[in-house]
Image (cartoon, rainbow, N blue to C red):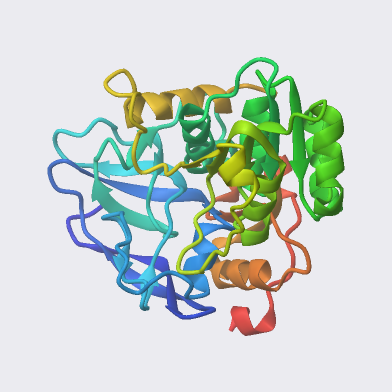
Amino acid sequence: MSDEPSVGQALWHVAPRTSRLRSARVPRPGPGQVTVRSTVSLVSAGTEMLVYRGQVGPDEETGLETCEGGFGFPIKYGYQVVGEVVAAGEGVRFPTGAVVFARHPHQDLFTMNDDPHLLFGVPDPVPAERAVFANLLDVAVNCLLDVPVRFGDCVVVHGQGTVGSLCGQLARRTAGTVIVVDPVDRRREAALAWGADAAVDVADLAEAVDDLSAGRGADVSIEASGSPAALRSALATTGQEGTIAVVSYFGSREVTLRLSPEFHYRRQRVVSSQVAALGSGLQPRWTTSRRMDAVFALLAEPWLRTPISHTLDFRDAPAAYELIDRAAEPMTGVLLVYDARRISTTAAESSSPRPPESAAR
């Protein structure tokens, strides 16, 4: 890079359900900073879609210094990009040429602080299209740290989006029985493929839990769908002194629950699992850096599946959100590709639909 600032392209949400690519000034990195050229980024169909739809309180903080604007619009928001360091200031951990995962919004070129909570080196065995799942896998790992799954436990995972699938796969390593619930046939089929014991629609959940838990109910339920109805269902099917882990972020939506009789008489625990902090009892042995080390180790494991349903060119980024928002069925991983030469053929050839005309303009 020259000493003059460069210009990149960044995705902004300018109003509810309206996104645009805007030019972004990219300064040369100073001390403690790096400039990253993006390879691929991942759209979260959960939290990011709440932002896109304007379902986050306008006074809430973004929580990331790499974001700009606010939830009252316009806002540049996102947190999972893999790219290559193309310029580095003094005193940074990553030299030019290093592959990194950045908690940064969708942008083709950007300069950011070398913050150990925001920027991570990607180990050689992990390809970019898997490394980009690091943040959502971090959410799943954090959930299993907050609510450990014991050998022999009956675990129910509500929702088989990306986070729900990852939670279920991690729980499968120790659980005696894993049941997933999702309304979408292909998601249930995918869960059976990675080893779930049962994959059911919500109408069949109570019977499945009763049968597979010998009438005890779930020991652990993980709510990863973002649906208030799923949280109510988790309360109804979790057993005596069982635990419900709430991984979903509900934003500004109101959630109505019926607590009697299950919650009160079964003495259930409802646990908030939020990835921004480590749960009590884990410190000082666990840090966010240690958790991310575990994440990248898991991403190198061939048994872990990182679901990609759609791949779009970054230039069509607004279409990704419109596609997710309008989809007849809920979607999983949507990749935005900046440099197709640096991702695998499998990822590049995944479904790449023609952008909606309104988003392409």
